[in-house]
Structure formats: structure tokens, C-alpha cells
Length: 406
Ligand SMILES: Cc1ncc(COP(=O)(O)O)c(C=O)c1O
Ligand SMILES: [Zn+2]
Image (cartoon, helix red, strand yellow):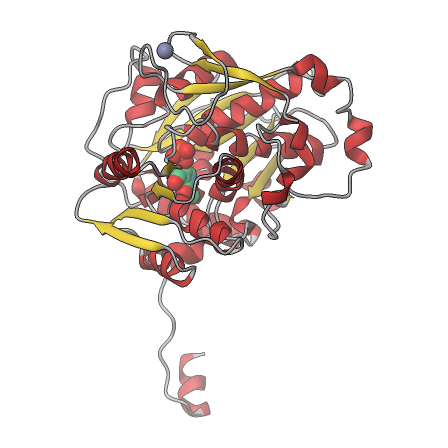
């Protein structure tokens, strides 16, 4: 039995019972949020019960997930990714306490596995036979990976320009792949139309209310891994804004069930070449589409599909938004790699780029406990990394040649 009470529109507050699959608010078209019976959950989910749970994955938080059938759980380890203390980067930035959450360590090498795990389980629980999704690349490769572990082939729409490694993942995992001649936003719209036409399950980010429910587990892990200490500041790379709204939901859930007693502030990081959410945060709060051109493909989004919830989360948490340049993002790939041994794709390094900028501008004080989400592995986009990693020394295979170089 799940602990879900219903769905609530993030924009107008309309409430709905959970019956079958509902994507958006029928009244205003806003995104939906899953509402839980926190009283029932808090009676048995405690720090002690979690300490005794040997399941180190997203599923250890089952009571806070919108699912009722455990038989669809994938045989892969999703979540409970390492939270590394980054001591050398602390010194570089003059910070007392900095942690990197390495979500590139998930099965398909990105944060998106958290979302896919819950969204796919939901589809199977509801009896859908075709699962479809559009993505900048990671949500798709994650869907393909997790579906493959269950013997399912999803239908995927990605922009034709998606990095080769992500497309390779899709094909290797046996998805039916449509490379759309257009942007991520075009792929998103085509997927939504196809799902409507054929009655397929639509896993699209910022449309399907269950992706946020998987993403929120990162906040549970951060608090548990810190021994239930709540960090002061969490920096999150933002595309559609769904990771961001998920991170905030996670902290709100924990407070609602009495597992934590305060909140961190959340900082939204975007490239200045894909800035719709941060523009809204720093402006009048209204999301307006941009023409996204950032090198960080995973956060290259014209119209953020969960932007309203993300802007709300920034405000509620007392956070802000920071724009970084693509050059800052590329530099952060190298800094994190050499400073902490973690190889991030551009979007995965963006939070650190934002942290550096915030420190320079005095937006974070020395004694804060800071978390940067590293959301995707660098092997997903080596083309970008190579731009800043430097060149190897080309050498003839003789000792003389070597000694000349050395
Ligand atoms: C590596 C990585 N980081 C960040 C994001 C941004 O997540 P969201 O679109 O939910 O804001 C994505 C989304 O694809 C991603 O793949
Ligand atoms: Zn509504």
C-alpha cells in the first residue's frame, strides 16, 4: 500500500485523487505534485528504522515513494551514491566544509536513474505496455538502461545533436530511438503527441509527476550520509528544473516526517546560454522561453518544463540563481577532476562552477556546509572535456625520443 493521499497542482492548488495516470492539472495545465500522508509515514519511518535497513538504494525510502508494487523494482543499484568530502577544493575556495554528491555513479551514469526508477515502476504498476520519453540524452539513456534490466524496450526521442555516448547507450540497451531533427523541446513535444495518439506512458521530465518523486531521494541521502546534519547550501544544475524541485521536495518531506528540523537554501545554477529559470528567479518570477545554446547539453532547454516549481523552490528555500559561462563550466570539469578525482560531464560540473562564482561574489560564507550535485559522468561527453583537458605528448617509441622530451 502506498502512502499517497492524492495529487495537487503546483500552480493553482487543485487537488485530484490518484486514478490511473494523470500528467497535468485539468484546470490550468500546471504540473502536479504528489501529496503524502506524512502522519502515517512518520509513525514508522525513523532514523533508527533507516539505520537498521540494509538496502542502500533509492528503495530504502519506499515509504516516501508513490508506489505500491515492489515486484517491478529493477535488479540494478540505483541511488545511495557517494557523498565525497572535497578537502582540496575546500582549501581552494576557502570553505570549511564542501561535499560532492557523485551521481555519475548510477547505473546509466547520471542522476536521471533516480527519476526513471520511480517513473518506470509506476508505468508497470499501471499496466502500460509501451514506455516513451524525450530527453536531452540522460533521461533517455537512463530509461533505456533501467528498462533493459527488466527486459523492456522503450521508445525514445532525442535531439539529433545529443552526444554520441548517450545515443550509444540508447542503442546498446535496445531502445527504439528516434533522433529528432530539432531541439530537445521539439523532441519533447513530439513524444507528448505520440503518447497521446498511441496511449503510451509518457516519462517526460516536468510533465510526468513521478520523476520528481525519484529525484527527491538525493536529499534524503545527503542528510542521512551527513549523519542527519542538514547542509546550509545545496547547488543544483538546472535544465527543466525538475531535479531542483525534486531536491526541495526531498528536504520538505524529511521535515514533514520529523527526520530533520531545518532547511538548506537551494541555489539554481544555469549556463548564461540557457538561462530561463535563473532569469525568472532574478527577475519577476515568470518563466519565459530562451533560445538555449549551451555546450552543457543536459541543461540546454528553451522552455523549462518544471520551471514554475523550481522558481517556487528557490523562493521557499531562501536561495537564489546563478548564471555561469560555458567557459566556467568547462573549467570546472578540470577543477573537479584534478581536485577530487571525479569526472563530470558539463552539466554535472555546472554546480561547482556556480559555487566558485558565488564564493568570488561573497554569496557563501566560509563556515557553511555546502553540497554540489555532480549529476552526470564525464565519459558521456568526452568531446567537451577534451576541449579543456590539454593535449598528450606525441612521441616516437624510442628512449632517445623520450629523453629529449622529458
Ligand atoms: C547531467 C544532468 N544534470 C542536470 C540536469 C538538469 O535536470 P533538470 O532538467 O531536471 O533540471 C540533467 C537533465 O537532463 C542532466 O542530465
Ligand atoms: Zn492547476
